[in-house]
Image (cartoon, rainbow, N blue to C red; front, side):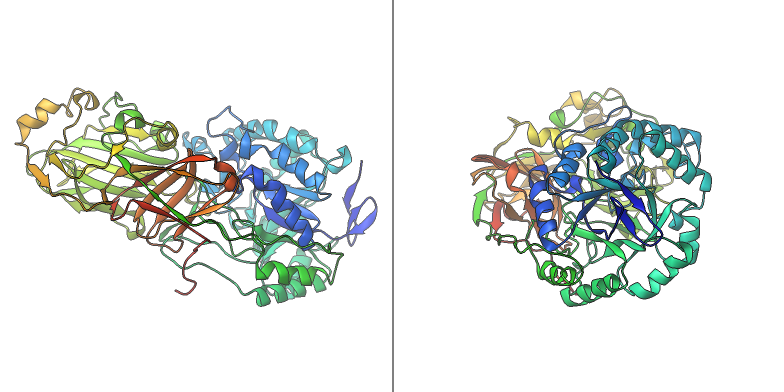
Length: 625
């Protein structure tokens, strides 16, 4: 058993002064079979502590559920930290930001409009209490005074940038203490007088978040934390990327100099990030300060240890700095060899239209008014919105598009409405059946737009007249990609497409989607599509290919030239790709591979080549913008 306390000038480990040299590893962004490797490499760089957020929405996608399987086994992650002889800092939120979907808050939390998020509101705190009842026993039983590695727990996250509800912060303290947390509690805020004053309470140890000008910012922190150790609990040694911009980097030399300046003051530190990991699946967040900016799949963050666990120049530079202030192991991590290079032909495909019966409940009722995805209980991914157009329809408009809608009339692509372009209207060609394939590109994780509904937001009008009814299909892409569907078949060299898209009448419910009524309303326009080049594919469609690989060895899948979509290997969702960049590869963790593997790719707009290329290293894109 041990003891960790905050003294007049220092952190105290078993009564002796202790400097926290921490680095962030988000267990939910790293494959669980890689946790031990990443933790070990942190110790070899000279760190003594691992810090992590807890993503509430990952553990509780449905209210009343708390998942701790596979990559959500926080107990195992903390035990691995202890096994490495290191300590742990846990940041359970409930809000975490982290460029993570919705800042970690579950989508279901916002279904009751009366819930007051991040403030002292009974419904919100009741949900937080349910969350903590499941989470805190895992953390409490692994505190240092119970033989575990946990030495600090953080209350909320940069709350001074959002609000100043002291009763709310007090309620979180009470919930943590009631849940058995006895180690010191901290808060974190950017070092401005207002944020530090608003974001904490007497009795909570204040820490700062910044990446430069350490002496100046620690002086501001000291005004608000007059006693005890100073700590930069988020030392920003890199930055995140969003689609359509450049890959952010900071020079190893500049970052190391800033770290040296910080440590020279005697302060403690937690590197944000030590290794960034990946926004697998649909887990990325977004910013919106006037322009919607979804975060990219890679969360490499230009951290000391790369997304795939490789030592970087920054790792070596930080290790040299840390060695001036603490003992650093002589051992260095082994170099990671280049990944295997090979090609896979995606020689089978199925259109999204033909796969609808396996993607969704196609018997869902028609709705008189336009629902959001949230109203249907779909808090991530894609949905298909369907309605019928009156003769002579011209201009389709919505209150908002969140976040991207591909528009089809009678199965033919018309255009795309994109939230980041502030697009809400589109001109329509002559036709009957309207489809919109809508993508939730990641929920805002910072600021007042946290928790907003996704999907199409009303009113929905055509030429100023309300459009409806609607059939909305929540698409289970992960389930389909993992199911080994028999719908896949060799690519057709040519096909005919009729106006009504040869829809199965069973998909169309009985009021406005009926096959016969479409035929009666408009004569079908028949388009003969000329033979496509070998290896090309029209979208939206899934393509599949099989390949052999070395089990456990990481790969990098090139997405260059593929437009936009999603990729899975053996049912594991690698994340989004988009030719906007910056990244043009997807990281494939070795543990998801077996001797024989299945690659499934969703091409939203089609591709000129269905040949998949695996390349030797990550390409995270251009660094100038």
